[in-house]
Image (tube, rainbow, N blue to C red; front, side, top):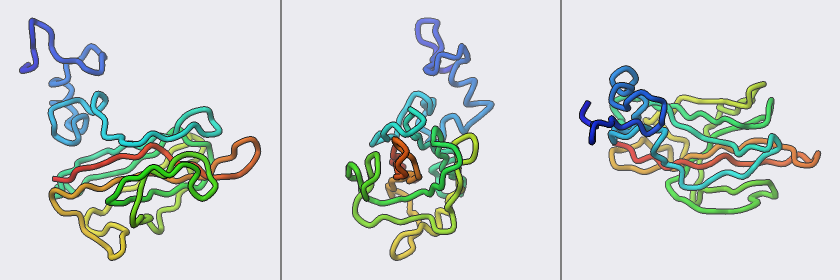
Length: 178
């Protein structure tokens, strides 16, 4: 265990299992390869707002930012049950409260792409996910990710606050691709 300092192994997620041991059995716990447990590092640059469940919609990344791996999945959770949702992306960041008359904050700016054909229902558990084809991002023009590119992702979903149907956004993530 390389992370032993003064007899204590690094266990940033406090689950009583040293991080290095977890990485050896599940490399996806350090998806960006920075040597830190992903539960202890954040690529969230903009937080979502509370939704009708009383929680904040959350966005997570599973897989790898290494282009050669072609293994990246976006996963939204803590959403209202059985609501229509989709992922959006942009090369730019912003903070636009109440975008389109909805709840929450649109955290993307500039040209925003939508994963067409990927509209999903959040189901009974309030979650949905999609694999991302890094060779064909839904931008104008359609773009492939190149090493060194930074892209921002967020999910947009239907919500009902006080009985009024509206929309809301999850937190937003920045991914630096390798």
